[in-house]
Length: 114
Length: 113
Image (cartoon, rainbow over all chains, first blue to last red; front, side):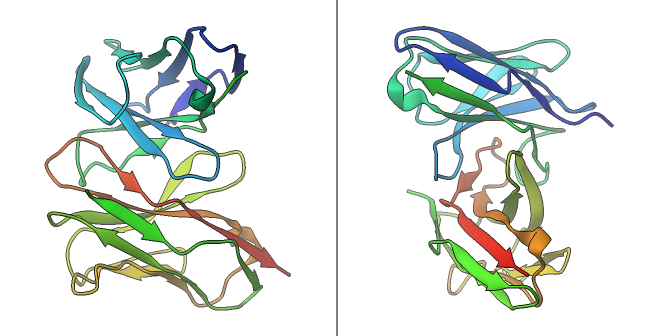
């Protein structure tokens, strides 16, 4: 069983640029959620995609957007990058939603904004 | 709002010592509670969970009991190993909703031989 894979593993961008992060969900999983983990902090929920629709969002501005594809893989897009966007971005997939559907996390993409 | 508070780290222990990492939560409803572990350079792995009051989650020698009266979910292990060195996150989620886990800030554990 292939786990959750994320690409790239590391990325350096300049303030004001745009970035796209990618995630392949675990086989059989139809739900993908994204989290931002700042250094020394716990992950914070960005949003979730279920059946290609965003159906839950945390306290993040609209310049954070995403997509889910028919094969359940997903992208996280961030426009107009700010220095505070520097963080580890984690993707997690699951078979469904809520407490009965354990999340399986990828190893993350480390984004540095200079 | 809903939140999770963990004891600050780092926690430094000798091998075979007893481990406790405190976790308390504030929630408007009745969440499910989790402990996740993050090894260096890796993503998060589910360690254990409990879905209702008085449930005990356990895995790999770790245990935690859902205490509704004290809103706590403390992580314990009777004898830690060097390989347990990692960052531990306590988290909650509400049933029936989407996958919005609310995490604590994490507690780093360092175990020395």
